[in-house]
Length: 400
Image 1 (cartoon, rainbow, N blue to C red):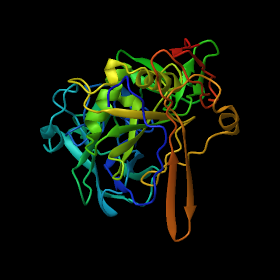
Image 2: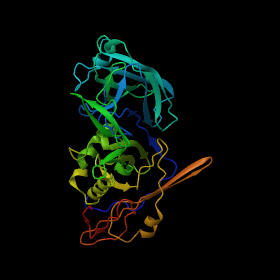
Image 3: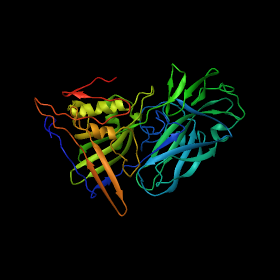
């Protein structure tokens, strides 16, 4: 369908649909490289550390002999529950570019969790505990001062490919004193040793620094986006990277959930969320930008050499309420119900789901306003808690 022609006005989806599941497993803590706290955005089936550029920011400090834990999670079942999570602590030959050999050579690595459980019936983070080793490269005879190591997460699901993620860790000798010894950081932050006896207090995952108040404040919740595209073929990694490129943001801020193929319509609904940036700016800004691009037929979201999908519509929710593998609990707010039909159009709507014992019927109503040459139609955007944005005569209002 050409961009200048009318979009679909109404789509009713009955229960005879096919859900396309694209498994995804990642490390939650320690915060993985380029991580967002609830999903690294770099976890992928590409070993040894997932996709994306190398980032060596240390996100945890462990002492040899200390009992620590790591947590991880998955989206969609991707096989059966099994003891198939492996965590390896290694000292790569080159910290910027770890290789597969770094995580198999016993002189460079120690497996610290050999077959932890990934319960595929749980959509929340799971964890395992272990002791920071004193063998291999961490032998006290050789590990005499604090240094940097890489923790590799490797999930080997019972179906599909392996998933990888990595985090950078400062490892301190047993009973060692670091530059963080005796340091008290602001609330919701952690001290990290730096070279030359320096240290830094960094806000914990999910928080950003308020420089005026010198506090670490909670980040706004992620914003859920549902984008409808033609066809059924979706590459999770490619889709994530291309949406990030369209919006000019790191791929770590795009948290892919799942794709649902609606066979009777020949389209796929792709669910993902956009996290806040490091300054605390809500992902709603970028979600609105994406909606505007789709509404205006922007070339960046047209199928071309740089974008592999034909977009039909996009829907933005107030915040991400994702139940992995089940579908979002998406119900429009009373404000959005009352205001529907009052300002100029954008391709948005609300999906109302009702679960019934013994049978599930999902009725998704997606309203997309026609864009006609020389005319304009009026509808009201759903009310977002972060800000109210209106569109006038087809031109988007500037962001506050």
